[in-house]
Image 1: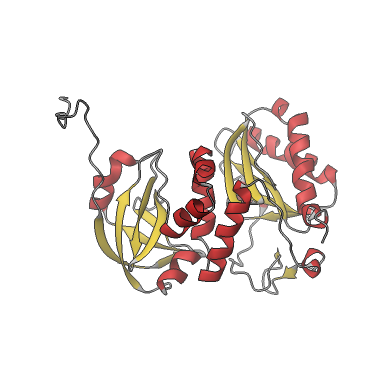
Image 2: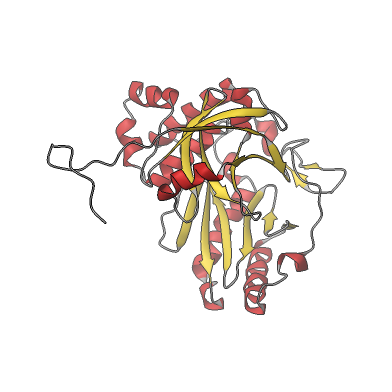
Length: 322
C-alpha cells in the first residue's frame, strides 16, 4: 500500500477525523439506556477501534459528550447514554436525539471546556497530562457522569484536589453508619434509597453455566478467601458475583478460561498483576486481575481482599476525622 503524500513540511500527518451525524431513539437494555449506531458510521470509524470498541467525542442534542461505541450480542453497535449525558441534554429513554460524533485516537483524551479551564486556572494541566491515558479517561468519565451542573462542578473540584494529592472528602457523619436500603421487591441492599436497578434474581449456577469446572474451582477458592476475612453478603448478578460488607468492595467475573477478580481501593495501586484499573471517582478505583491457576490466589490476593474489605466497612470515611 502506498503511503499518503507528505504535506510539504517534511512529514506526513494523519488527517483529523471527520464528524458524522445521525438520529436515533434512546432504547434500554436492562437498566442501561443506549442508542443503536448506524453500520455506516461504524465502518467509517473502524480504523480507530481498540478491541472492537471505538471511543468518540461530540455532541448529543448539542451538548458535549464523550462515550464509547461497543458491539452488542445482537451484532449491532451501541453507544450507552449515561445519566450525566441524559441530564445535560434533558432527554430520557424513548426520546429521539441527534448525535454528532468523531472518533478518538487510542492515546487521545479530549477535554471538555470546563475541565480544561479549571486545570489551566489551577495550574494543574501538566499534572493531568502526566497521568496515564487510562487514568485521565477514568477521571473524565466520572465528571461526564454527573447528573447536574452543581454535581459536575463538585466532581471537577474533586479532580483538582486529586491532582494536588488530596484524596480526602468530608462526608456527613450520619452517612457513615446509615443502614443500607433494602429493595422491597428483590431484597438487594443499596447505599442509596430507591437506587435504579434491575430486580431480577439470579442463581450462582446460572453465572457459571457453560464455564469449565476449573473456572468454578477458582471462584470457590476466591469466595472462601473473601468470606474468611469477615462477614460478607454475596450478591449474584446475571454474569458476575459481588461481595459487600456495608458497601460493595470486591467481586468476580467468570470467563472462558480464567476468573477475573476486582477490588475497590481508595487509591490507585500500580501493580503489574492488575490488567485494568478504572477510576470511578477520586477515592474509588476498581482494580481488576486475571486468575488462571489456583496458585495465583496467593498472599497478594489476600492483601487485596483485606484492603478492599476495609473499604467495604467504610473505614476510609471513619479515619478522616469526621
